[in-house]
Each structure stands twice: as structure tokens, then as C-alpha cells.
Image (cartoon, helix red, strand yellow):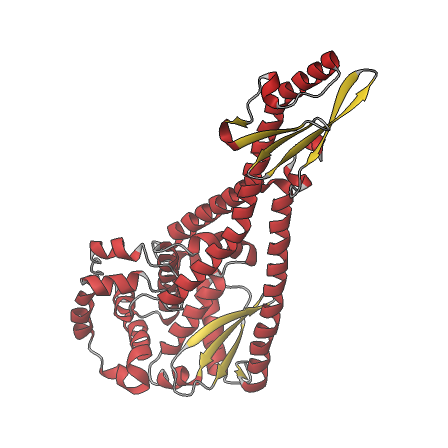
Length: 404
């Protein structure tokens, strides 16, 4: 089965990224609820839905364009069309336990040696560049390695829900790049299972670097010497932030040879470099800045609103005894005190709360940084009753419920 061909770190990194992603989403939801309540959470959810819909539209147009290109300009591999490749595809699917055989195409690579797997609305495709097929023409089992590698991507491709769940974790330094490299190594093992020869698999990998002709001349002994450079600091650093393992390491892995350890100091610097997928690290940094900016634009106003609501709730508690004193004073003297000091209440209180009294209307204001609650009296049967509303510039959502 395909699970037997997983690289040893692939499964653990997949579980770890899912757990971290779940925790990150849960913390984000809890933070929005705490800082902004259900209203802000609903607003963020609305923005997320719009973003997802837009992303889906982009996906539809870009991926359907690729499918149209394959159907219109590629050669679909069938039992009647390039039957040898079709037989290799069926054989690989049987070896890997893949019941649903994906469609496979050959397209002109214009000199590029590569292959890839792609998806559209749940249906997978395997694409071989013609240069890969031609390069492996004299190497039995070589093209099977490429087919098996791409079938590995098909088998272990995350569904949209799991991809969204893991998304926050896979943006982290070290983790995102490590899982991407582990997945490539797993797919190499799938290719090894299909080619059924470690040396053939290594030769197929060498062709990616040496080209369609020179791959035959590559010495595995010389590659072993080249592999030892992987322990150097700068080499270790740049591999740690890369989404692909070194080609020489991939060759060594399918050949069953030991892989040298990376320089441990490289991890200290790599953890500071944002993971940007297959883009340069500088692009990843810009993406980080963008995401942080969007989150800050949402979270900072939400936090300020939360802080103001808390302060105004505290102001209401402080104002309650003052209102009682004002009511008692008016009912006893049938007049409004000239100031709060006349009833023994200070104007400024701890926490930045400021109380103000209008001696004409006996309106009491409790404000924090210019925003607050105004309490207006009405007299019925000699008793003072109070109603409240926001002062100028205070939105109803920030006020205590009975003042909105």
C-alpha cells in the first residue's frame, strides 16, 4: 500500500502541522470573541468567506485554463495513444494500491525535465514533460519513477478542508519547509516502488540536474563526496528554508545511503526566516507583513473597542453611587449642587475616568479619553429617575446594554 512508502518524518510532521493549525485557528477564534465579541467574529467570518469565494473563483479560472491547455495542446496517454506509458501508469497504480487511475498527459517541455500532478474539482491529472520521457527512453524503469513520484502527490494530496486547517502551521519557519521536503521524499519512495530499482531511481533524479544526456555519466561515488558539503553552515541554512531537499540527498535516500547531519547552528538562523513555499524567502517575508497588517487592522480596533467597553462598564459601576447622592441632594434641597465637590465626589478618578456635572440640568457624564456615558435626570412625584446614553462620539456598541 502507498502508506508503506512514506518517508519517516512525513507522517509525524503531518500530524504536528494539523495539531498546530487546529490550535492556531481555535486561538484566533477565541481572541476575536474575547476582543470583539460575536459581532466582530461575524465580521471577520464574513471577510473570510468573501476571501474564500474570491480564491475559489481564481482557482476556477486558473486551473480550468491549465486543464484546457492539457486537453488542447497535450497528448493524453491511453491504451491507444502511447500505450507503453499507459501500461506503466496502470502498473504504478497497481503497485501503489491506487484504485482510481488518474488521467495522464505528455506535454512539450521545451528542454525542461520535469513532471507534476494537478487537480481540478476533485479530479487529478499527472503530467510528464516530453523531455523526461525522451531522456528515460534508454533507461528501463526511469519513466516509472517519475510516474510513481507524481502518483505519490495524488495519493497524499490534502483535501481543501485539511489544507485550510494546516495553513497557519505550514507558514511557520522550519515546519512548513520540513513538511514540504518530507512530502517530496515520500513521493521519491513512491517512485522507487514503481521503478523497483534504487539505481534507476537515482539516475532518474540525477537527470533533473544533469540533463537529458549527461545523467548517464554521473558518478554516484562523486555524489557521495558532494553530499558531505550538506553539513556546512550555509548549505544547511538554505536547505532548511527550502521546500525541496537537495537532489544529491534525494539520490542518497533512494539508494539507502546515510544522510549527513546539518549544522545545528543553521537552525538558529533558519527559525527567523519565514517559509514562503516555492517562492524566495524575501517574498515570504512580504506575505508575512501583509498577513500581519491585515490581522492588525482587524484586531487593533477590536481590542480598543473591547478596552473601551470594559472601561465604560466600570464607569457605570462608579457612577451608580454618585447618581444616588445627586438624587438625594436634589430631593432634600430641591436644587442642583454647584459641583460634584459640593457632595464630596472628586472629578477625576483612577483609571482615567472623569466625572462631570452640568449644574443647569444636573446631567452627569462619566468619560474615558473623551468617550463615555451621559446620565440625564427626570423628576416624577418628587423622585429623581435617571436615563443614560452615549456622549458625543461614543457608538452604541461600546455602551453598557441598558444605555444603548
